[in-house]
Length: 565
Image (cartoon, rainbow, N blue to C red; front, side, top):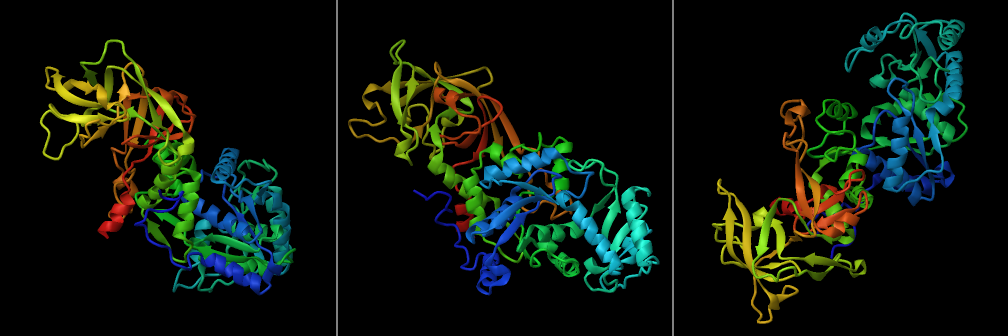
């Protein structure tokens, strides 16, 4: 049996230095930097739902702090009132707890708005910030580009007194939205575009989810982020690789401020990308808005709440993030690798049940009238502690349509006229005939059973080549089952055309109604994942009784990929 959360035997072995962030933090500790203290933070903006990429960041931020006996804060970088909402705050806290990291206190960048404002005034008094009256398009054009010089603003040399006066009037609400901004006076010719006099504050009268209408100016991400780190005493500010070019600005701001703690160190690591997946908030929002998916928890999405609804165990996600390691170069991991962790975890933990998704009636013609038998079947062959269950059987059963063929090919070992097969945990049955409708579709299969084979073994030692699952027709429950394929057909959505939505899979979900499941599934808990024998792992929908989502199939596609490569 595979150990919980571990990859299949064919999965690759991670490199020995799989987490360079850990190495850097350990080196800082050994040198006495930060006094051996480790404090990190996970700083999402509350403008959407967490996705699988955030799961890696959570694992790094909280995992590093935990490994070194430190602290990791959950801090919302809530500096954009137009897109942020308490709905996202609550969802993120809930998702974080599900992943396995509960936080005693939730922090917000908006907690520090007054301090950040005071520091902005300090930079003005030092001649390191100024109010610019130009619009955003002009400012952007004047910044130039790589190999193209920047153009200094005509307002760059305003006096300290004039800048302080204008900035205070910006805060007081005397100017229209977009009329003025506060910019850092850094270096308009710097090769790093982030240092070409970046905007620190803009006028924006959006209603803030926490401060309401107290502020009409809001700090930009770059101005608020590092300062929030410094106020909280963060030692290692861990972020994804796209912020690599922001690090010089992060350090520039902090170097000019009277910090209450040592200046934090920003470290960038590769973000998590998966094949057949997009994680852009804008694109995910479009999928929801356009009705391509049913909402942010649609099991086809990579959001944490969608993966949770689909039945992904949080332990499998954490083990996957550990396995892929923390590198310095962005790469795209195959989704089959993540699924292998999900499958291995569920193989250990999921109870087994029988379900028939596309039912075909099987009648046992020699079954005694009115007889009902009970069979004791293990709940999970991988874990004896999960015990057994009683499964009832009558003379009419449901089997899968695919488990019967009239004219079977040579290597088809399931039911066909004259063929004997084993019914899971019950008896051997032999097909004696079938009934078809006017269109030639088989609607019923007739069999006889051998009463001497109870439990699935013949006393004379004869063997059969197929074991089929079944559900007793008299005891079955009706269920709805959703089957999922990739939401995007291409491994890298949009790689060929530049537009990911060109690669949307129109057949990404198949909804099966009138499925037949064994009676024990009537007791399934909301969100519980079970293995439908021979079919895969399925999650009981948290909101709708006897509605199931396929989590993953039984076949280890990752192992097959490794064998082909």
